[in-house]
Image 1 (cartoon, rainbow, N blue to C red):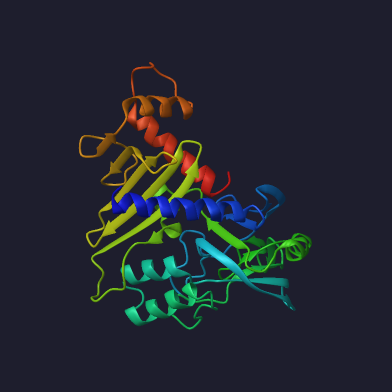
Image 2 (cartoon, rainbow, N blue to C red):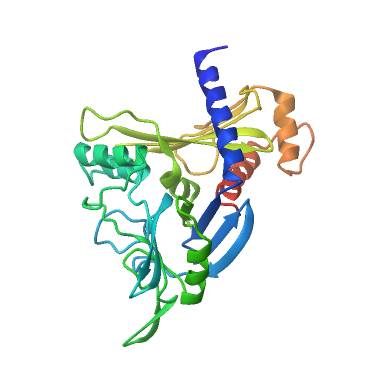
Length: 313
């Protein structure tokens, strides 16, 4: 057994254990595009309500004054009453992935990167004095906010706002440390998943960073899916999707070398077991001739499966 496979198996075991433990935990999922918040407990929907987001509805949060709601995985760090917004759940922004992306795009320096990553690693309160901003969370105040022009939606400086009655319920149900997963379902696959990737780079000894890459592992009914995204200084992006069985043995690898979500002659598909690839096509619910494999259909179905599982759709 080679070292890489052994490492993957260890990761899979940890992932399986984490998944088992997560059944006893809550998860808040917020879709910025649909303006919806869902609280899950034991993978069952506990509450579902409308939200407002930051005034800047176009981007994820990249700087202190952009008034955008961040995208990524965060934790509830504190709960408090709020004179302005009834209740407030503070989240752990900025997190590790926020910092690595900001460093890659030249928004922060290596020292700031180190501070944010170290705080996240030690599960401490993240620095709030960086160019990325902070002091964000979920609060009341209403989905629609009255101003001189009438009732306005998406009125916050980057927080997520609920109607007061929904916020009171969420405040009562939400636990400290609960994962808050904020995403935008209107984005393409690369942009949607990029804020959730675990960075693969070591601490840089040079700036700018020449290449960013991140990894995400998911347990599925097919086995395990290993998703890898990368981008270089020339803004060339790539998507790698690998399917492995429950022992870590590779079944399929897809490399979309320009992240256009379409496989062509420049991309790579490696099927390590023809029969298992045929079986996979059936398990994904794809139609077609039994002996034929449509790689683009499989690639599309795998991307959808990743989104559905990770964002609990």
